[in-house]
Image (tube, rainbow, N blue to C red; front, side, top):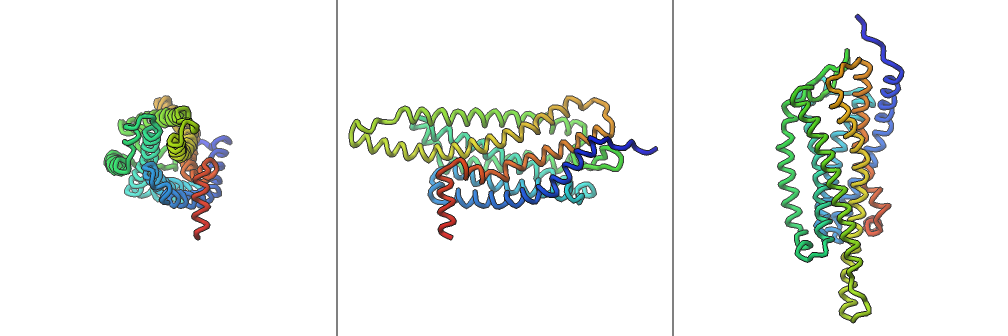
Length: 322
C-alpha cells in the first residue's frame, strides 16, 4: 500500500527549509565565523580584558563558534544538500546530538554568568562589586563547563535513528521516558534561562541608573571632581558591556522563544494520532527552529558593533594596527 502524497503546505515548508539551508546557511556560516573571531579578538584586547566579564564573553563566543559548526553546518549539509550521515550511523547520530546540546547549553550558561557579573559590578555596594573578579570568572567557567559536559553525556547513550514516516529517518530521542525527559528539560531550561537573563539584564540597567544618580557633584571640591570622573569612567565601561549583554540577551530571547513554543506544542500533542503529512510538517518546523537558534551566534559581533561605542573603537584599533 503506497503512502499518501504530501500536501501542498508540507511541500512548501520543505522547500523553504531546503533553500534556506542551501543559500542562507553558507552565508550565516561565513558571517558567523568572521563575527565570532572578531568578537574573540576584541574581548582579548587589554582594554576589555581588565573586566572579568570579558572572560565570560570569550567563553561565550568560543561556545558560539563551536555550536555554529556542530549545528548550522550540519543543517546546511543535511537539509540544504541532503547529505546526512547521522541517519545511517548511530555513532555519528549520538555524537552530533551530544555536541549540539552541549555547545548550545554552554553558550546559554556563559551568557547567564556574564549577566550575573554585570549585576555584581554595577551594584552600589562596594563589597558586592569586589565579588566580580577574574578568579571567580575562571572558576565559574571551569566548574560549569565540566558539569555540563558530564550532565549531557546521556545524549551519547539514548538517541536513536527513528523512522517518523515511510522512507524518512531522523536522529533523535525516542518518544519514551528519555524523550519526555529531554522535552521537559529543554522547556524548563529555555523558560528559566530566558527569565533569568531578562531579570538580570534589567537589574544591571537599574544599578547603572542608581550609580548615575549617586555620583558626587563635580563642583563640591577638586577631590570630589576627581572621584566623580573615576566613577564616570568605570560606569561608562560597564555600561557599554551591559549594552552588549542586553543585545545578546535580546537576540537569544527572540529566537529561543520560538523553539520553546514549538517544544510546548509537541509535548501537548504527544498523544495525538498524527498523519504522515502532519508529522513531516512538524519535523520541518523543528528544523526551522534549530536553524533559527544559530542566528544569535552569527550576528552577535555585528550587533555589538552597532550598539556599543567602545566596542567600535576597539574594532577600529585592531584594523588600524593591521
